[in-house]
Amino acid sequence: MSIGIFYGSSTGVTEDIANKVGELLGAEVMGASEINKVEDYDFAIFASSTWGMGDLQDDWMDALDILKTKNLSGKKIGFIGVGDQGAFSDTFVDAIGIIYEEIKDMGIKLVGQTSTDGYDFSDSKAVLDDDFIGLVIDENNQSDLTDERIKEWVESVK
Image (cartoon, rainbow, N blue to C red):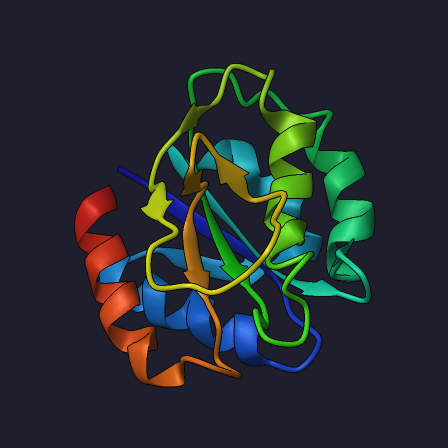
């Protein structure tokens, strides 16, 4: 199965997480600006940090418009959200929730949901049926859990 990870990263943290996941999955990792390639993969993973008060990371602004024009029907889709649950508790990892909302009705097969247990936040657009829609990383407050969370998520989506 071919796997592509598309990330948006302003400070490099999301890029680092995407590369760690990509190494474990044997995936091609590229910036969101290369979203035109999404149809080349059986499994696409979208990684983003959340900025401001629950906004998409800048690289995803144009990429999301392009993504909505692609044929995603039957494609496995996963998400990686990077955020700060302490400072932005009410918009924690909203960016991946925004991307999901835009593509959820395009025939995708969502994979890689994770439990919200172990996180302390008040609201998130990335929660669906009481679980996160994907892997969620908080390097600001829980960096000691990052590697284990990545490992467990990768095993769950293999």
